[in-house]
Amino acid sequence: MAHTLSAKKRIRQTETRTAANRATMSRVRTLRKKVTAAVAEKDKEAAVAAYDRFASAIDKAAKKGTVHPNRAANYKSKAAKAVGSLS
Image 1 (cartoon, rainbow, N blue to C red):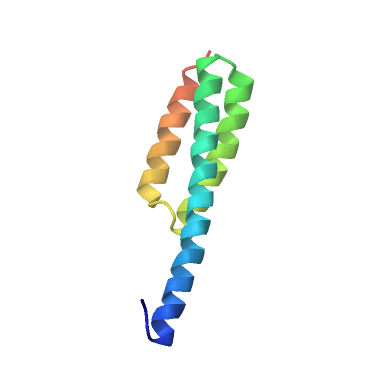
Image 2: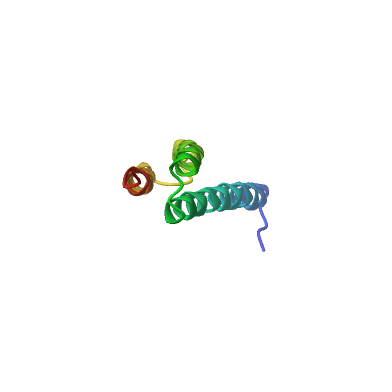
């Protein structure tokens, strides 16, 4: 167990940040699944709408440092390619 005040503060900060990061990543994963589901159903309107929400969420996660910017770009690229494949 931590003994110094600074170590105790770091533990509190880590718990707070971990909770925020988990919530953010859970939201991103859910939105990513919605894009995949809409593409699987071949519903272009729903896929585009889901992609817009997903792209916004992943950009925010990358901006906060929850996800590496290159990983966010990779996710967006794959999702955009899938949505673009719909006629």
